[in-house]
Length: 208
Image 1 (cartoon, helix red, strand yellow):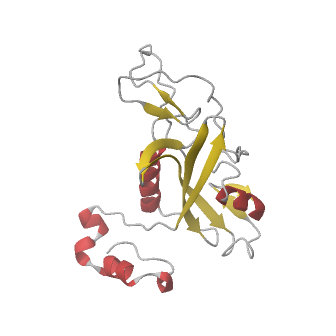
Image 2: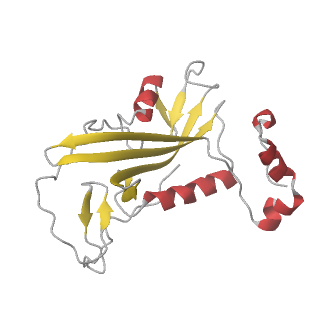
């Protein structure tokens, strides 16, 4: 069988069915099955000297109560999902995507998966709260959920979402660009780097 939940009273009928299904046995099938606790989605319109743009922030949270740690199989899955979400830019910022959504061009910043632990059950009854194993307060947790601070660095963000490099003219590109999440601008995918130097936009594997 797949690993049973420690809190079976919170298990859905579908989750119980998967855990008890012999055809979904984890070792036999090589399956790691985990759910998503929380997805935080912030959407807002911003106007600056270049006009209006739509910003979407995404954050994925794995919640653990009573100081519990993710089991190894779940941690392995979350790390893999995190790396897929991370994109190919600097480790300190989110993965940034330009997408067409409902006919509008929007910027999506994906801050990936993060581990939230309480010493008891929630921010009110817990004496200690940890974010990615770093101690925080309930107020800092509110700031994270509001995206007032970066979920990755816990540093204060600019709530205006203004473009720091908006004055520079963007030249027309004849190749498929990627997005640098540091400056939120198009950067070239065909840059030439010395063979002994790593591309600075390649992330190191993060610690969850």
